[in-house]
Length: 211
Ligand code: ATP
Image (cartoon, rainbow, N blue to C red):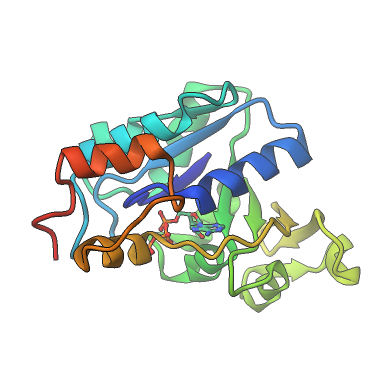
């Protein structure tokens, strides 16, 4: 499960997901746009629009799919609730939660972080300017495991006993906030995200009234 605001989805997200899938031989990656992100507001496009942009971005990859679980719930999108629901829906499968190292380090500020780190294993990827070794700054890491030599993928252990696979990905320094900033300034967003998503943003004026 790859969660995010995806406001909008871009090549940084897509390439990281593809590299994780290939390196770990995953059968599928479920993109999970958060409908009402508890920690982000301001120029947030409507949940339905972000869901549609993810749909457009992943439709040519047979390993990628998008879930409307958080959008359907409509209330604040807590990852703990989403992981619990995924586990209920797909026993005995165990979800793996993919996230960038910046997001992983932020988990202590999320809803019920101690519960979250008990619920599933994690895959943490580098995200410029942060290399994946930054993961050691997390208060939840118990043991560096095979991460000691700095090679990736590496397997580390959390205080909950759950595992984290850390992985360096091709550094792609794109952020959704930079894309929104460019749109506000009337600048080009070409080659930062799939063409289908760019066309959707322009023809639906997704960010025109958002500040
Ligand atoms: P914003 O700039 O609005 O904060 P964002 O670009 O960080 O957005 P999110 O939807 O918040 O995008 O990110 C979802 C997940 O994708 C997070 O775990 C984040 O760390 C990861 N991620 C985002 N951009 C990249 C990137 N360029 N490379 C690797 N991972 C990324």
